[in-house]
Amino acid sequence: MGTKIAARNLITDVAGLRVGHAQDMRLRSGVTVLVGDAPFTAGVHVMGGAPGTRETDLLAPDRVVEQVDALVLSGGSAFGLDAASGVADGLRDMGRGFAVGDVRVPIVPGAILFDLLNGGDKAWRENPYKPLGRAALAVATQDFAIGSVGAGTGATTANLRGGLGSASVTLPGGVTVGALVAVNALGSATVGDGPEFWAAPFERNAEFGGRGVARAYPDPVLAPTKLAQHGNTTIGIVATDATLTQAQCTRLATAAQDGFARALVPSHTLMDGDLIFAAAMGARPAPDLAGQVMLGHAAACVMARAIARAVYAAQSVSGDALPAWRDRFG
Image 1 (cartoon, one colour):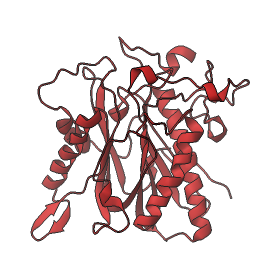
Image 2 (image 1 turned 90 degrees about the vertical axis):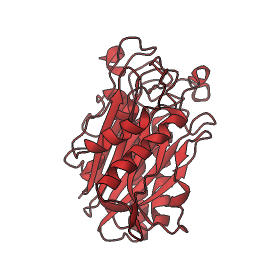
Image 3 (image 1 turned 45 degrees about the vertical axis):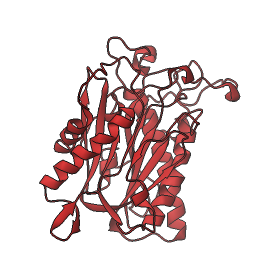
């Protein structure tokens, strides 16, 4: 018995998770929130040279808090870190959070990408990301859009519009693994000047066009980038319904970084803040050693697929400096 795509082909195929988006098209930026019906175990791994994060130190295996309430991906560079404050406010209103006496403190790690030079109106007087974070939490659901939404609203790659993507797979034993990613990479998700994706070998059911692998490959050392624009970073989340420790979640996030390298060329550069969170819901038993290996490989595969789906589903708006994949290749 092989693997199969779960019902939605979204990270919310992992039971107990919901995703919400909020965006401002004038701002050309937005926020995406992953929230659990209950707190969940989480880890993180950073490989980019320019990360922007909130509460990631708390996810180390030796820290006192072992579970979080939500994870946030946001545009806005350092300003976007405030989105997690809006999510925390919303969660506190729901009575969620780590109990300290009679006070509850929602635990909301977050990461940001840089989209401040994408043509949107950035002349705000008050930071817009806190209300965007709260708004994204309020609409979190199992069925959500991908493409030019949420944290992927203003995202770009070296040659095309970026976006927000997701994918999932169910392993032979019944464990589900999903990925959620905002693609704003320094590099490219497609090969040369063609429509084929670097992630093509991992595609399922023509989920990003079914174009197959490229017939010709340019010099891989001379890969195109958008270095002159200084607006990069791909940030993502992988999740599973298996039971994992914080250390195992960290290992899962580390393994999922291979998905970035399979789908984006180049990746993990000095000018990217590439980061992956991992979330474990604990509804299924803890995997053995072989199961952990399979889980890590599955996480990398679904992440690669989610990246390609983000670019494939992106839509252009007036004034874009780069075309969307659909505009260029149909």
